[in-house]
Every structure is written in structure tokens, then in C-alpha cells.
Length: 407
Image (cartoon, rainbow, N blue to C red):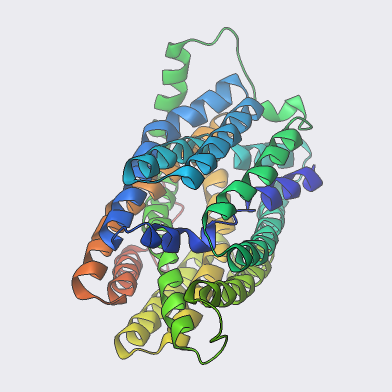
């Protein structure tokens, strides 16, 4: 199953559009505020479906939930490719959000169930980090293919069409998952049962201090990360336009080359970080001490990014973005492992979906504000200011030197 889990991550991350998504929206005439609102709309939709989708996965079967997820992704990609106005972009974001809602939390719960069933619970961070490393390698391959498509076609629409192929292959991959990973299900299933699972999971998160804290930290770390990470793209475009190379080709093609190189390095580094996440946890002495260290590193990198953007050092700003994404891939496996440690197996997918909803809530609040600030200031420094503020607040509230596992 490690092969299928890794294949899932590899195919899932064949998002040829991802390194160019913000640039594609800018080309369609959207302001950064409009892009932020579009991202916020996606997160609102994710919030509407996130927790119910996790409960549905726990009750009706996780494999079915994953098939629904990737079918929604395929519809979304086709809509993005054909969109000619903002209304169609919102429709595409809606179906993409449905895909996200049914996927996030569900597949992680399947991995952790497999780990538990096969008596490897002490390796959960290592196993999840290993599969995540394949996801990041898939992203590295995706960047090369996406950059090549943009360079040779001179258009962004093709990257959406070609991404449909690996997503369809992943549906085939799910058909080979064993039924034991569907989770324990009781039939018949009623709305009352669905609400019961949801309510008990919410009580579990609210009633356990370490679980509640992990979910709130996800709002700060992951919410800011997903609201700001795509601003690397316009910074790369600015840099590419100023480089004295490839002067015979269009700005779009020059940008595609630089995006391809930087994002390839970024994803290779992120893959290595994900694979070594368990070592960071072990070296730190546990998941909570590791979180302390990673939050401190996050603060330092956002401070460096802020200084670089204010001064105008684009190379160091790009480096800071790359390192922040590597840190996120150390953070994510450790966070998911923390949540899995404090929650029960029966509600695994639902609790992880609550965490994903918290992340979406953070992105929903931050993305429009950052977009408005970038439009207003005409600079990208508000991107770093948002991350620095979140890291500062969390660091000031973390229980350093105390037992953060206390209920």
C-alpha cells in the first residue's frame, strides 16, 4: 500500500497549473484583491463542505469520497481552461473546493488506519512523511512539464487540460485500495448518525487542549501559508523581466523558464524536508518541541522576507519563499501526527477535516486582506507582514517549557 499511497500523492500533485495560477488570473485582468476574494470564495466553499465530507467519508466509505473528490477536480480543471469571465472562474473554484473538501483529511485518515492496522503506529510520522515526499517529487515533475507547456504553447489554458489526465489515473488507483481502509461503517446510515459523528468530533477537538491548540496553530501556519505562497509567482515574473537572458522570447516564456527552475528546486527541497520530518521530531524530542522550533524558524524567514521585499532584494526574497515552503513540509507531517496522536481512530477523517477547515478559515480571512494591501501599496511586503504577524502571535502564546499536552 505504500506504493499506492505514494502514487496517489505523485499523481495528485501533477498540478501543471499551480506555479502559474496567479499569473493566469492576472492575465485574465484580475487585480490582486479580486484574486484574494476568489481564493477566499474557494475557502468558504471548502468550509461549507469540509467537516460534513469527513463525516461522510467515515460513514459511507473513504474510497467513494476520494472518487467524488477527483471527479470534482476534473470538472473544475475543464472549467478553468474554458473560462472567459470572472463568473466562470468562481464556478471553477466552487467545484475545486468540493474536490478539496472530500480529499483533505480523508486520505490522511486512510494512511493512519493502514499504519494502525499493520502495527506500525510508532512510524506514523515517518510513513506520512515518506508518502508526502513522493507528492513533492510529483510537484517537481509537474513544474517541469507545466513550464514546458507554457513555454511551447505561449498560453496558460493547456496546463489545465493536461492536468486532467493524471487526475483520471488517480481514480483508477483508488479502485485498488482495500475495503479495510473505508473505516468502520454502520448501516443503515442516517442524517442523525452523520450529525452525531460531526458533533462528537467537534466536542473532541474543543475538549482536548493539545488537539484544540494544534487545530488553531494550523489556522495560523497553514492559513497564512496558503494565502501568501502564490505571490512568489509575480515576484518571479518581475525578476524574469529584468534578467538579461532569453531576450528573443516573450515575457511569458521567460517567466515560464524561471518559474520552472525555481519551483523545481523548491519541490525537490520540499520533498527532502517531508521525508526528514520524522528526524526533526526525533531530534527535537517530540512533536510539541519540534513545533516550537519550526515556529521560530518560520518567524525568522518571514522577517527576512519582509526586509528583502522592502529593500528590493528579489533574489533573497525568492530564497526566503523557497525556504518557507520547505519548512511547511517539515511542519505538515509533524502537525498531522500531533492531531492523530490526540484523536480517536473512529473519528480520524472528521477531526482531520476540522483541522483542514481551520486552515481554510485562516486563508479565507487573510487572502483578501493581503490582496487589497498589495494593490494599495503597489508592493509585495504585506505578504511577509501577514506571515510575521501570525508567527509572532503564536510564539507569544506557545507554552514553552511547560507540558503542552495537558488537557
